[in-house]
Image (tube, rainbow, N blue to C red; front, side, top):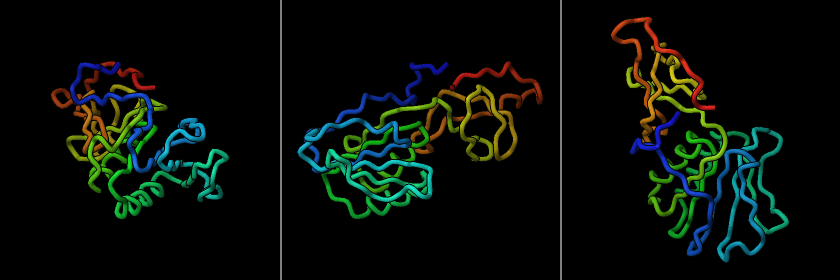
Length: 193
């Protein structure tokens, strides 16, 4: 189970709009993650971006509340468009990301690279607790990890999944668990549903 005393472990606040924003861009990994905002929730314009994983159902439309929603066919497609959007954005944008940790921290990395500071980016965790694990030995990433030990997708090493989280890498650290005695593994537990 995750240890909340680990200083690098992200802490998330409930979703809330920043009242002083010039504009709001709310990005969700899944449609069910989008917050239900009534008309008039903010004087500033609000946009929703969401991943729908369906090549036939992407593009922009306006909801009955007046909020514009843009649907993307994949996370990669969304991140590519976000890069272009942030390159021409002005001061006053509040960026919100709602989804799994790899999703929200990939958005965070883009936000920081384009000059948004911590007060302009608001992550909200939603969905699975499965982890992205970074192998400190071969520098590969293994996604969708639900157990305390996982085989690295790069080098095949048996990695102990740690609670240390790197915001820069958007991943939890994985260290070879059987480095001293190859093949000797502690019990593998389902820990991140």
